[in-house]
Image 1 (cartoon, rainbow, N blue to C red):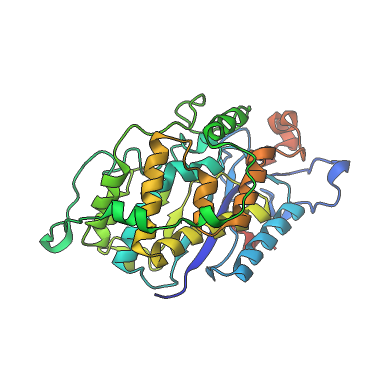
Image 2: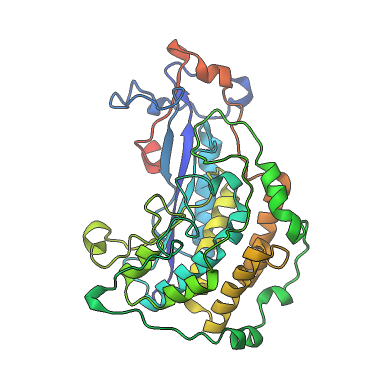
Length: 385
């Protein structure tokens, strides 16, 4: 299989004004005059209190190597150090993973989808709980065809191939990496979800589509993770996998770029999109999350089948008993001990809750007239030089 590639896209709010607000605390920051409405008369009206999100392409497509992750982190930190920006709860981060212009083999596609399907609730433990209830990143365990028990058509009249998985044999045969990896825990498994839910309590002046802000990250009552994974393994084409994982909204793990009927015409670069993460301007975290996403794909495509099913089984158990398997266990099983430490430090400090920096005050944002603060979503990072 071809080497794994990735790219990163961020949402952020960039602050600038017709007459920039003077702030002696951040004099080192460059004035964002080249983004002013005077220089861009085509800017449409802001959507909320004179603010808008801007999608920022942090990188071209790069190989999933340490050098590539370093470059993404470096550019992200330069962006934060140069412009007045913030990432309220309405912002997200997307990592696109692929193999350049090529396709993942169908067998690899089914493995990747199965891992995403099974591990979704575990992976959510490294994100703000509000991301789970956000309409812009719905997880596959809710509202997908697979979750609702619907069938999906196979191309050319193929029928799904029944899979007999020797699950108990695989469980007995495997030795998860976490059992042989040193990791000092700061959270016990049974308290992690509660701690993350409590840390989510904050007030944001920005719109965020959340069904119920008071909900915690609770196990999904159905459907059965193991049965869902087996159905994905039974798929005979890319279309079936993509349709099973489609929520008809904005998926946390989007496989829609792959259906064979249209991908070459509409999506010349087939990718899998990871969209669960909240927005961030922390270069270290952005590069870490990109590495986690690519490592999920690398594990799914390269691990032995018994290791794949052991992880699926552990995630299945975690859905009914959260004292046995959590995000740190999963990251250790992926061989990401350093990344697990980063996730734990962020949870300890609530760093995943990156709120408005005091470049301007909320009162300033709500003023009218010449001090209005604007945001623009029409330019990428490379257009801001």
